[in-house]
Length: 515
Image 1 (cartoon, rainbow, N blue to C red):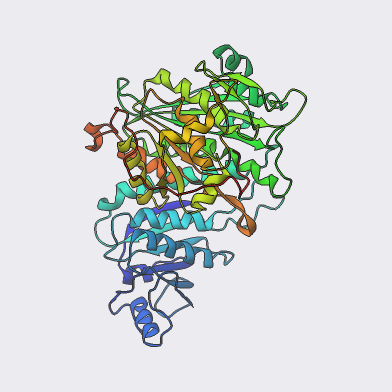
Image 2 (cartoon, rainbow, N blue to C red):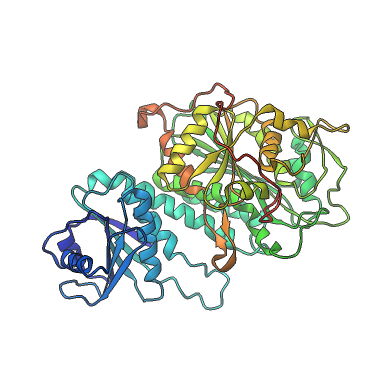
């Protein structure tokens, strides 16, 4: 879909020739003498529309409005979060109405972030997956105009970033929604190469022999049970001087997770195709970087394989030697995500990064702790954690900081290796993060557990593209100081601040996200 930005008042927006006009209104909307304002005023008097969050009023061929369909969308206090929800509700209501040309008119006093919110809300509500359907119907919306009051130039930067993020999110959703027989590790490598060719990135895709030569024993062990060959993908975007240390993004790419020998229950196992949500988010973020071209260096690392049971598969009781040289006793083969990530985190050291962020559908325990609203955030560096939290809030893609107290790592002790790969049910999301932390001690590090946010189940089943919005916003805020006037995350490692936000207790039950 094509987005454009225009300066239009309500009267001008009403005159636009389009299939539908969405007008976002807060509770304090006053309006003028134009047709849309008159409708809103009359509807309020009649008690049919109040501008409250989620409220919609639809009109067909309303006098004085060129669009066939008019939707008034309530945005409550007019915050960016409410605007995104209002636009999402309005566009969702127009689905299957044959709307190809849409104008979204924002309030005259819309806050910073309103343009981003409008683009994100439109893109999310209009997305339809058709790649594997015999009759690819449903993608009707083709052109969207975001109408703002005043000078367009003041909103252009935010609009360009929002459009790039929306394209990145859609790219991630498309990959996540592909069935596991198509979205294989090989396919992820091919998609990375296509991105690199289209946007001028550097790309290297390693196979089983190269991974074995490097000494990535944990990644190689997880891949043993599948006939699909593993891939280790390295993407590099250079938007700043070569001397600038990069941010490294590490995405978990388990393209299907049966649990291995520790096999999962059959119900909803099909959703384990979404276990490559971290990998999809890294690729989606690079898709956005290719458009917005920020002044920052970024490296993407994606360890990818399947986790299946066969005669060669990883077994409970096996001891692995990771790339770092640390040994790991496998107590549960369904805790495979951390095994492939630990080798990638060690590999990241060679880039001398300013920060490393790994993204993974890691634990069902995080779903119990935070549900589907916020991603779990763990960080060894306070500045990095704050930057990610602020980015998530600004992008309406929120996360919540969880603890990393040393005591949580006690459960990883074992008599047979340097550590075990699981520590029991209590605080399962935290102990998984503590495992990863043992491989991320040489740089500022953060871990995003997206098991609850990377996809939806039930009638709305499908990938969400999260946390691409958060990652893009974070990277834009971490550009070289000469370009963005922002101080990068501090290089010094810090322990989490006392009283860091947390859930008191997390369990291992709930959605069967890969451990």
